[in-house]
Length: 398
Image 1 (cartoon, rainbow, N blue to C red):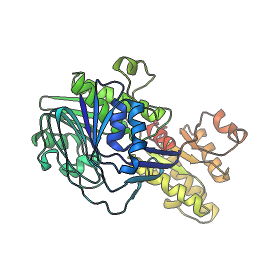
Image 2 (cartoon, rainbow, N blue to C red; image 1 turned 90 degrees about the vertical axis):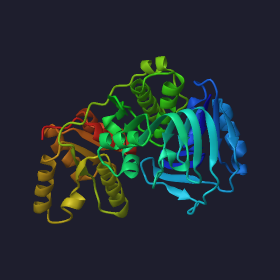
Image 3 (tube, rainbow, N blue to C red; image 1 turned 90 degrees about the horizontal axis):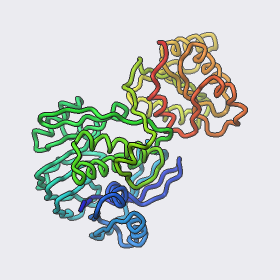
């Protein structure tokens, strides 16, 4: 039996549209339901939501044990990379959940902590602020694997370097540390072994819950199926990629995962400096430019934004400065909705200079995109996917 412990929360997203009840633990249990022998979820859920969640549990074939809460916690996103608006604004801390078993997957929770005693335990702290160390609350594990992203690792250790941070977690009692590093894949560290596992490319990127799926898959393949930590992490990376691409659960078996048309992401190359092209003449346009710039920076890219680097000015000054900035970049993300003349000119200049182009467009007619599609610009309709596709480009000649 795999026991999953953590939160079940309401989730809403504007673009793409999403209105579901999962949370970290709920999604992990759903992911595990059809592949694991027996899955039991421990959570806190408001009684008014139990009937709705019973349908989720029934669909995915897991059982759950609820210690009722008087709080309904929800996450609302503009898009799946945006910072969510969390309700209620002040979440009251409730008594700890207590879980013991041979295999336990423990998530950090908004409203509680989980005290775990287990044989094989996977811990994913998943906290927006101040994640706690596994044993801070008295939890114990004979074999402990900690799965973290870079932000959580920095919060737990104060270190930016993934290997140094993972080594510190090993020193505090973990047997295995898996550090997720976005497009660079993940580092799997043990006392006597170090492995790198790739991330996998997808056509579409839905990121809400991808970490939950990764942790669930790692737990299944390592703790229940007995695979090595590196192989389990690879299966987890494949599982997360499939989920990002399809927005669907549950997990697949190792055999079926290997049949999925997934390609490892190559390591980032080039200067990784992106030219952000797009109009900024009204509030809507400026918001999109600001949001795109913020998300590109979060991907580790350098960004040249004419709005931020040059600003308004006379044509003879702005045009020259913008093209100099474009010459210094090795990729371009163009926000082409509306057919802004300056943006289209910058795309043409980039193609003439062999600089790869990602064009984000949700509502331009296909006929208006003919020159872009005919010159191998990558046209993407989803905002988050456009951000990732830009990050994944191998770069141009600069």
